[in-house]
Length: 119
Length: 368
Image 1 (cartoon, each protein chain N blue to C red):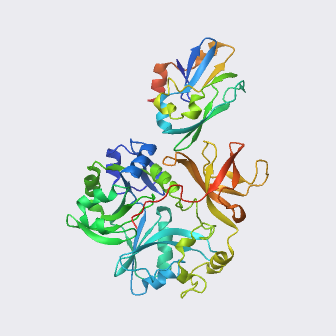
Image 2: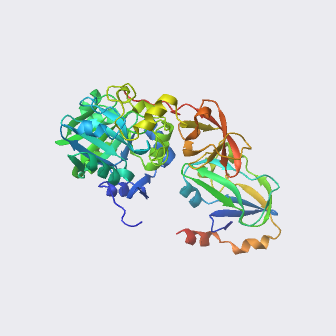
Image 3: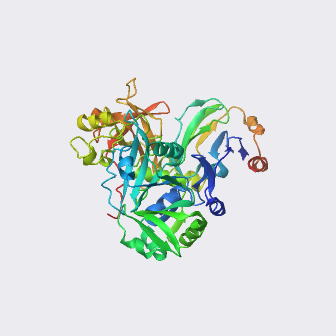
């Protein structure tokens, strides 16, 4: 598992990366009430705002961590947005991204580095 | 974060694990560990305790206080009976709203509560037009709201059980005079309690020790008042909106309207009385977004999916935990302000439909 400075986690699954938000981010957001997922087959550039999370407090974006194609989205979040609070680093993944070069993941933080980052 | 003030309950908020944020010049609890959603539901089902000490408390004394205050508000103050409270609005010469407030007749004086962000301006306004204006600076103000508020407070102050909505009374708690009103800003039955600062924390601790009572922050206060269809000054009403545009006609008693015994005689009466007679150009309405996406403050509103010019904007909006769906309030042209009209909000570049609905979103449960 890798972590970004935008509080996303990235998990490798075959030739895809699965993207979600960290428990720390979910706690900061508060109760999530709405998730807007990207369209399938979206070509995302790095830093594109691909998802919107609305909590009781405010709206926040999820950015594409790398350039790639959105090949799968977690429709469960549309019907059950509170999953983001219940299981942010498990069932509440947002989308799967097909990227060209898995080596690009190396630049992101390890779990220990992320823990230092948020402490 | 410079020069933020703290209420006398600051240490208690910290001890309770509150997340504190700047609000109207004060460092105030936005939520406690229970979280906004939990605090909202707790207030709707049990009893929530709010610190509203940042609001302005003012005493108006003198035989002419009621008549003088009446010259500043389109509200019947002279007819307000002793032991009763009423909602009022300071209007300006253009018919806009300078602030909304509560006015209580406490026998030998009037007691006024104004918004924190406006209190300096309100005090100057009052002092410019009335003598005998005494800001109350040594009392905290707390609110206990929810269906179990009476049960909880009556254990300490049995006399509250006999009060009905908008009654005010001075009642004793442990040798301390509490100024209590049966009112609030959540749509729930409940009480607002002005307590000497030196006893405020003890009173809060006595209430929080009860199973029914939990501390509630500004986050849930906002979602509660929004579901109740109540205006937040500076957002849903301001110096540009008239009381009639703000759908606050109910606050203007007949005696102050055209052909009333004390018709007019308040700032902006020309515009306000004309709007009462002929209707306003625009109106505050309730909106239920038809999708799950909340429409928040500032969302531009359109008459159709492809219209180019906005017809209005959302002034308050978010998720309504009790409604279980997003809810918003905003202004639309009066000819569109009919329930079940569909209009469109621009949410992140997409036109999403919203239905105009009557307010409140959730029926209030006042003990009338």
